Length: 416
Image (cartoon, rainbow, N blue to C red):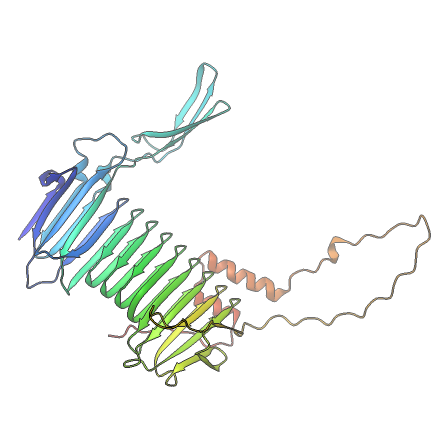
């Protein structure tokens, strides 16, 4: 069965338009959703079909063809839902400058195209009008899927938030500036955002997350393996590790807080590797240090390995995440080896007091050249950190340049 529908073909309920799609039992569900700036909600429920609902939002007056922006195609459990940006109405992409004098309009100019968006705000200041305009038309989408173990789902937005719950299978979520929440999922979960925050609760399986400036908060998880990369966002991760695999966290300036428990039946030990340029570490005293950058807990660290790398971010590690467990001991500050600093020149001998000058003699003032300039090593270090912040090099390259004697850290392989 294959069909394509638009919003004009749907059933309406209190402003929401909805449609039901039959689901075959012998094929996995493959869902793709693309929505520029509206909320996308996907959840599993006790049903045999797929339910798609959407509603128009925004202050702009309604038009007859607004709903035609929503389209979806379904064919043998493959469902594609998308919002066509071209049908949302052309958004004003230029500048508007209006200079006014008492009783007259001096000039009005609009650059880079016509104005289709409504004026939503105007500020008047000393005869100059500043206009803020924008097309806020968008659609919120809600999708309910049957509870299956073989769902494959991809959701992408530009500025819209994403909420996914109860999905088992493969989940991929991408947003530029929207926040993303994933809860009660199981399988392979991949999240990516530029400036939005990531909230993850009670997931199981393998987890991958990438963020530029958004924070990541993951709680109540049971993970086989995880890989997290962040630039300036903070990372909080609470999970039980259930398989002997390599996991990794990399940040530039974001702090990392880990609360880790291990399943003693399947993961008798854990090794922790921490590498940083200028960050500090607080390590749970249950870990014992066995190398300059390595700590172990349990059966000689057998099984799992957790690697944390930062440029200037701090690390805190605690063992145990179960609410019923007794409170663990406070983490102990540790000294993490940093790249060698520039040698410090010996202090010159203390100068003898200068002889008193006769009255009326000129007073000597220190020259600006007397201020000590940064050492070459410090200047090179700052240049590396700035290159990371600009995205010109990654964290691994920064660490290699700042600590050339260290061994490169490889990305952990994703275990089957």
